[in-house]
Length: 233
Image (cartoon, rainbow, N blue to C red; front, side):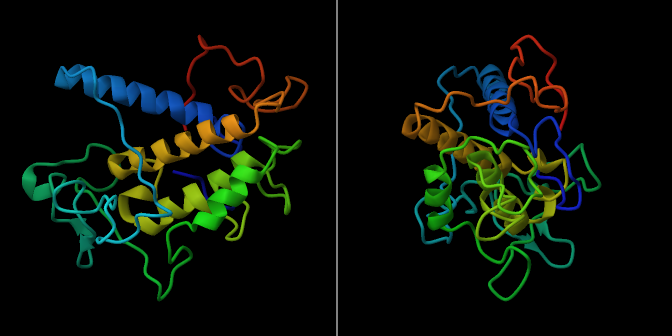
């Protein structure tokens, strides 16, 4: 999940230019694990087009009983439908709850009462800078593709696009153990697809990561090697 707006960062996987490549590698490892345990080398992670499929009537909406299950129920917000319901033997080993929790936002309130708008995505894809020169998510107007997609800038600062999905789903998607909810992977697969689209739209951008002359934590520099240790969130 994204870190709170009061936490300046950056962190190895958030609030900096490695947001996209860090999560691409995380998705790749998970996808390979699924192939290994299933014995099916053709398995590929799908993405959730959250700006389009936002209600049960939409064909790609993931929160149905035959896929990810629905919203949490009652004061505890425990998911009680679908294969990931606690009653079906789904138990979490990380975090404060052993059950999968969801607390969908509504139009009546909350800091992210709706899922991301398609206009937010098109605006981010039109941004020609991968990341702003100071790589500081908290500077007003520090628009960049990474910052807009991660969600710290845009029409709903702090809860735009990626961050907005985490907050809208709520429950297990809020803390740093958010991969407990399988929708985490569908969310990040969509952001990875947006990164691929952005690269195709802006082939002339010379650097996707900052030069080593910028002062940034390990993992965010231009010369990050594939053999380097993958730092935690």
